[in-house]
Image 1 (cartoon, helix red, strand yellow):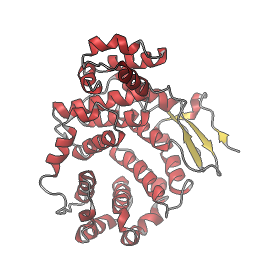
Image 2 (cartoon, rainbow, N blue to C red):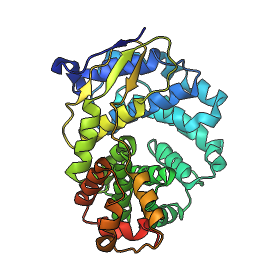
Image 3 (cartoon, rainbow, N blue to C red):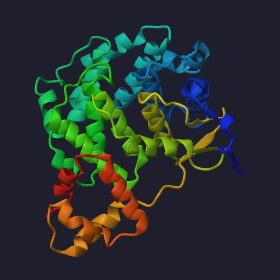
Length: 350
């Protein structure tokens, strides 16, 4: 039987600095085995957030990964298809304070082996370029036109005025890579910032707090400030998380939303909403979410038949077809962005 940790006791809420050791223990040893690619994904995500947000990891926290770090080069040679995950973990461990310089050799080996040449996606090439550059290694796959193609993609706001989660997550990651995870100005132009704004409106209408948290992080790393309505929604969602100690239920949970929501709160300087984490096999459960308004609005638009791209004209006919809760979400989305009318021009598909 699962043991649900209650969240209504304030003492069970902790800042990330107080949870680091527990999170490292849980993800490194108590959820999956190191041979599972999802172990690589989960630990790469956690370590990346710790490293890029400037967290201090105590030596005993790093020691949890010492054996894995020692075997990393051998693992890289045996699992070259996972080179980006393996490099990410190793680089973050070293930059967080793990003794050793194995990753300089690992980056040289990846480049000399031509592993980035196997990437079909510009996004993956950009990630590979960033990882190798952390140890001063360059590879030809990072061609001169890569940034231009990335900026062309994020510079088309119309793409993000429609529901497309894959495109929205690619948008956030392009900003992460161009900004070196907030370490430099990515020099986003107005169209790229509008793309983030449109993607955030869609995520908010959908009540997709995982995506919304990433958009809030990317917006700040891009030099903008997300509307408080968005960040308050992420904070409220994080504060309602539950963690259950469970050694039987399959690990299909909401850990990613928990991590990126914590990251978003770090970016806004309000890291006080995370639930304490036990050092046992556990699952992360988001609180019951409000029903998405996105589908209801789309259905309403489709049923109207004759549509106009003018939100002022369409507002009343659309809201008349929605439930009160959907109207509340729609009105909050409208308040959250001065770009809402411009967003609706594309969303209406008139």
